[in-house]
Length: 477
Ligand code: NAD
Figure 1 (cartoon, protein in one colour):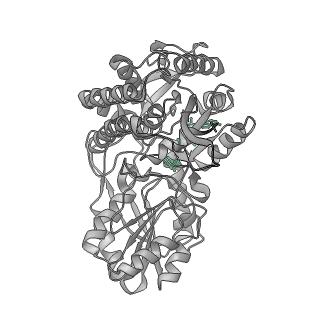
Figure 2 (cartoon, rainbow, N blue to C red):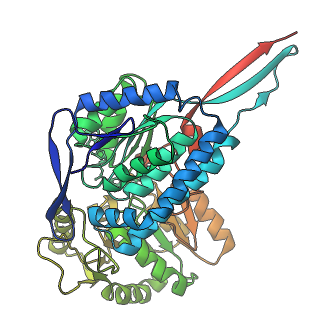
Figure 3 (cartoon, protein in one colour):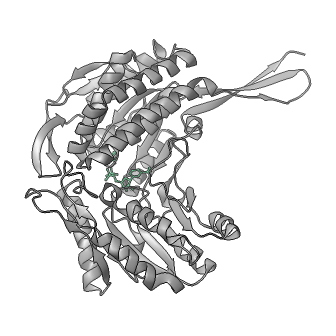
């Protein structure tokens, strides 16, 4: 049984209710978490406020940095344990869960080094004045986290908020949260004062809602679906609480006829099968120049046919999807493709011996998907890649920008001028040229435009969002 972690204490939810945790590899319950309510959020917010006003808020930037570094080292010492938790909870192949643990440690390392490098400026003003700016923490920050990359998203969101001096209340996803409860315990062990990091588990519409509405939350960082992102904004707007929104994507991989296809193919395939396609920045559309369309589809199809899906422990190319409803969602998209005559180029396969009850979906490559079709417009959030052909740069830009999203884009061409032209014209928060970093790059600011959200996490840029700027004007004559 997993408990909440508030003020460095493991405690049950006040209402005494729990939620079953399912192992996506076999669909069986293997643990329980607390089904918290508004009273538990209130308790956590009070603990965070006390930490912010007290021992945590009084630490110098240098001391904060040292604590974050100790947590990074502790995570590395406990890497095997955290990897095992994440693997079971999310159904991730071991290699993916291990990579997520490394990324978590790296976030705390990066933000440890950033704590004492965040500073304001002095500004020229009228004679007889000195004007300076201070970067101050918001106070108590709320973090609503999805199930697809719990550790990575905790690292980038909570790591940045702590580095800036905030105390954090974290609401992980009810579908996967065990690793985060453990990380908060490890933080207490390395010396984070009570209340600096609090974890309250439960259902989104109950405890997530309570967090977003709580008057003691000074900033909300939300990562999740556009639908819930809208609700969070509405709740936050009631009390003018600033929000950072990291939402969905329908990211294009744009491949020109002069591209290095040997380099592109494995990256394009990985960008849709990583985490079984359950990645906000999954490269879920591949836009291919007409002259190489058939040849490249053939090669991508060959690669898809070799992809294997299995249990997390089998450590194959893909693990199961997170839950039955996610599998139903992917199946519904694929059924629609079939009924409407959208052709399948190739499919991967489910390995022999996977247990009954697991949420397995073979990866699928579809061709000639109409630009405005749901499959080319909406997040499937599964291993489904939609291919379509373009004629020239203008056509590629039009197709790339045709969705409501704008998170990441990949551009594959050897033409230097085209690389810059395309990077400027594609509307997205990140552009990768001749590479693709689905979720990668702790140092690289990340976030979207349009319905993919706003604000940036990762990199130094995130610290600007986790602080507020105060201008101090001194008249001294
Ligand atoms: P979700 O929106 O259903 O849930 C995200 C979080 O919000 C969970 O913790 C959930 O409990 C909580 N929540 C749900 N309803 C709520 C409510 N009414 N009030 C407050 N909180 C509520 O998303 P998900 O299914 O967990 O994750 C998948 C989505 O997240 C996809 O759309 C994906 O693209 C997006 N995502 C975005 C990024 C990014 O950085 N842009 C990263 C990962 C995932």
